[in-house]
Image (cartoon, rainbow, N blue to C red):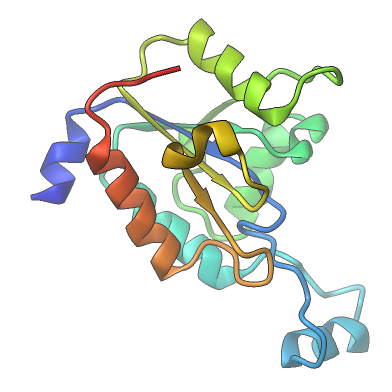
Length: 166
């Protein structure tokens, strides 16, 4: 039932990397110990977060817009990074927000939505609070990233949107 409702919409998801799919190291954990044992092979991308992201994206008519500072490396680099780490829906990654050093992330997202009115629903996955869009954001814990709780909140955010408001 939820999937049927969401499929009728064109969704835009703004995706941050660090703190969402790349989780921070927590002192004293096994993950931290492994990072220092072999720093050349350690990867900050969290497989559990990618799995949750795959589950969230499944069956949705969605475009992913990279709002992360990783966008400075380019759209193709971001797609490749996601694909290499097991993200099945890398083809949904369509764009990045504008790179403008004088704008906040909120302003970049607002500008993007105004320039792309085709979206009927939208959501932000970011570990940094975006206060003016808190009803559209899943704010992740940077040590945990996008988890089951975040996925459930994301589904609820999309269900609660009757129309896009910029």
